[in-house]
Each structure stands twice: as C-alpha cells, then as structure tokens.
Length: 198
Figure 1 (cartoon, rainbow, N blue to C red):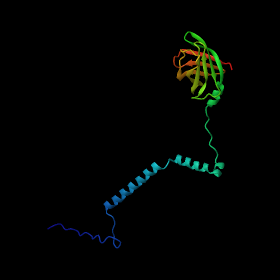
Figure 2: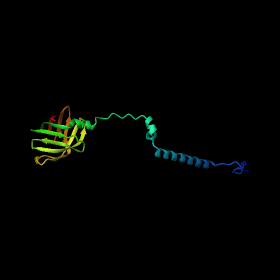
Figure 3: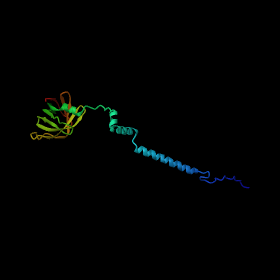
Figure 4: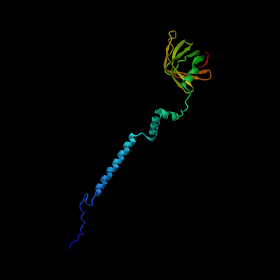
C-alpha cells in the first residue's frame, strides 16, 4: 500500500472574480524594484539639490533682490579686516634716508615712495651713493611687520654699470614709527636704518 496523499485545495481562478495575487517571488521583485527606486531618488536629490545651508543662502539672495524685502532684511555684519594696505602705503609715502651697510662698505640710502604706489606698480626710486645707483622700484608685496618688498627693475643712465637689478624683489623695508629698517633677502648682509626726511 502506498502513502495516502491529502488532496490539495484548488487555488481557484485568479483575477478579478477570484482570490489571487502575486507569488512570493513576485513580491520579492516588487520589493527590490521599490528599494531601487527609493535609492535612485535619494541619490538624485543629494547630488542635484544644494545642502541646507546653500538653500538658506539662496533664499536670502532672493529676498535681498526684492527692494521691499531688502529694506526689511538687516545687512550682515562684516568680519573685522586687517589694516588696509592703502593706510600702510600712506604711512610709507615720502622720502626716507639714512645709513646702510653691506659688509664693511658703508653708504647712504634714500628711498622715495610716491603717492601712487601699489602692489605690482612703480613706486618711486631707491638711491645709494656708494656706486652710485638710482633704481626705479616696484612694490612686490606687503608682508607682516609691516614689511614692504621692493623690486628694482631699472636704473637711471647716470647709475654705475655695477648696480644689480633685482626684478624679483628682495629689498625689504620694515615700517616703524617714522623709521624704516632695511635688509636684503638676496645676500643677508645688507642692512640699514632710514628716517623720514620729507
């Protein structure tokens, strides 16, 4: 005798008239597609929408472009700024002269800084009586101290042929109270102290 099989219930018709649905593998596919759609949506949103801070900034920009809203929106408080370069250049403008020394050679140096001096622009002349040299100077940079780095791009025709051009800078003047301390960045052995004379 064999094993008796229990009769299986007839699933019946599927569709609108009968009970039916998706099989377990069908539901797994629907779930996988749903998860993929959510992942894709989140990826797109995070890549194409600005962060929350960016959205706030964009809203503030829109508000600020409206004349009525701009009158009601307070202006942001600016961060404190360092002393403007123009104020430092105003303090430097004028004629400075004093003793300088390169090794055992002593000479007088005169620096004339014009009112139109600015970074990257001609600023006046630097003169030494040792050779003599009268060089046209350009401001390379203003550094902490405040220290002004000047380049010498050319010399007047009456200057000595031994005068060395320094187109990249290297003549440093540190501004104090009506005194300029001078040093070079290219040989380390030249220094001086200049005082305002005009």
